[in-house]
Amino acid sequence: QVQLVESGGGLVQAGGSLRLSCAHSISRFSIDTAAWYRQAPGNQRELVAALSRAGTAVYADSVKGRFTISRDAALNTLYLQMNSLKPDDTAVYYCKLQTWSGDYWGQGTQVTVSS
Image 1: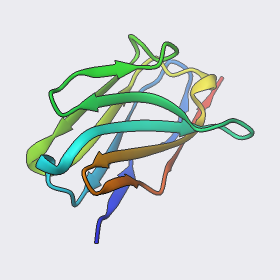
Image 2: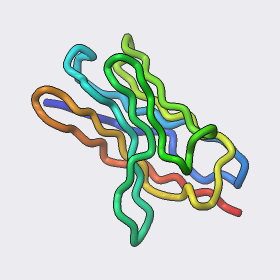
Image 3: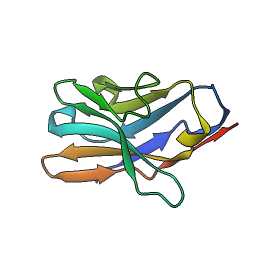
Image 4: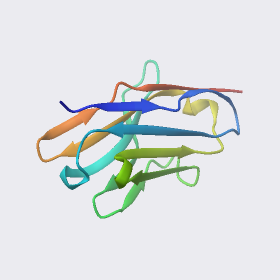
């Protein structure tokens, strides 16, 4: 059974940093794209950052230069380093793995940025 477990969320002041982790049970050879999404209350879920199998990263314009997506293949873990956080970054953050057998989502982790 596929499991994705996110951690690292919390409450932080504006300008602070957090690192989200997504530990999963999927072989890295099965993953096409790994990504982070977020959803704020009343908003649709939006893509924050994505990392292809080849290592190419893409970011939403709102987080470019502040967030970094990365992975540790040996640990089967996806990361999102978030720096210079803003109140607008407040949301539930989800990891998503796109594989040959389907898409898998984590349960979400809350990030709250106070002004």
